[in-house]
Image 1: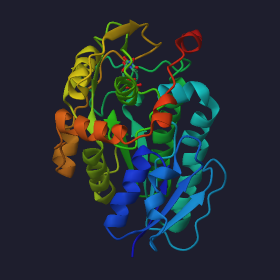
Image 2 (image 1 turned 60 degrees about the horizontal axis):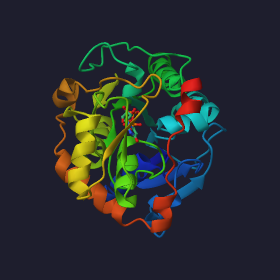
Image 3 (image 1 turned 180 degrees about the vertical axis):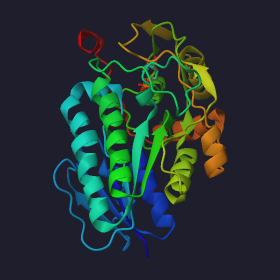
Image 4 (image 1 turned 90 degrees about the horizontal axis):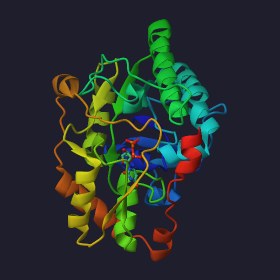
Length: 328
Ligand code: UDP
């Protein structure tokens, strides 16, 4: 049985990765410090004899007993509201955490895949974003703690690859959605779904002309799985190229949820990228991968998930605090 360590195991993507590798009959070590993760996402795995959970912060020395074949590093806050609330942890997990996990991979002779992000492109001046684009990042803005940690993460990963001959993989993840997204992470999909379910108006930031391209979680997991098992060690974009403005997206959500909420407009947060769309030519050619789930189907599944949450959970949603955000 192949043995894999998944950090950020109790998070949105981490928990889906645990499910996938359990299904593929791996022995899975899940690790999480539970700052933004939730044990509810993986509690169904605790009864299995090929799953073990470690409550641990990867910015501290990481130990896993015995042999390891693979490491997936998915531990990190991943929403703008989290970067504001826990900026130092965001920097540390991308920098110190990655260093510890690269060291562990080297010690165990394991292959390691690092979760990077479209945020390395910042507010992009090239559209759609190809892997060759170097990006346009404000180092000292509110997103800088995430963007720069992820850029450093890519650099140190390539250094371990080139200097130590470590087997490394880097996925640049574009906006991904689906069941188990945290309702209160401030991201647009949980925000709109929570608002629709509570009967509140949908808050569009700016004039809503900014774009995003949303990838359903099952497609994202398939792309990551293929990349891990491939021979390709340079960064690769995984995302859905179907782009939409946030205003049109809010209208779609209102239709989907069958509610009669209105759209209200609030100020655009600082450094909010104006457009984002992955160029996935490389993923198609190298991994034979492309997304299969359209937005209508994916959003319906996601809404069905949010409908199962309790009234109490629904009330917990936080609205983003723009005043403090824009002060930074
Ligand atoms: N957004 C919005 N209303 C909300 C939350 C987000 O209009 O209640 C916008 C946000 O300004 C951004 C887009 O939706 O332009 C996606 O935001 P999200 O935080 O989901 O992800 P990211 O900006 O990191 O892509």
